[in-house]
Image (cartoon, rainbow, N blue to C red; front, side, top):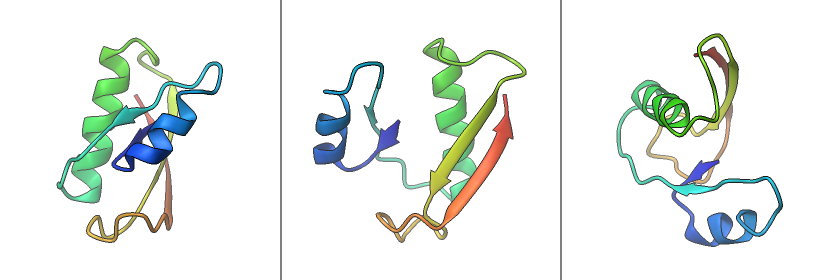
Length: 74
């Protein structure tokens, strides 16, 4: 999980099996998804061919207001 909300990250990291990371990117929604998916591959959580569910705010400036779900393939 990538979030710009440090409180959410702290709470989620207490859950077994959840890895939450602080992300402060100010790019467009499309660029953010690419960056996050690339980072999850680098961390070894996904491999080529895996599906990733991205939840985010569109437009990106509306942080905290999740209104978009995208299913992407790595």
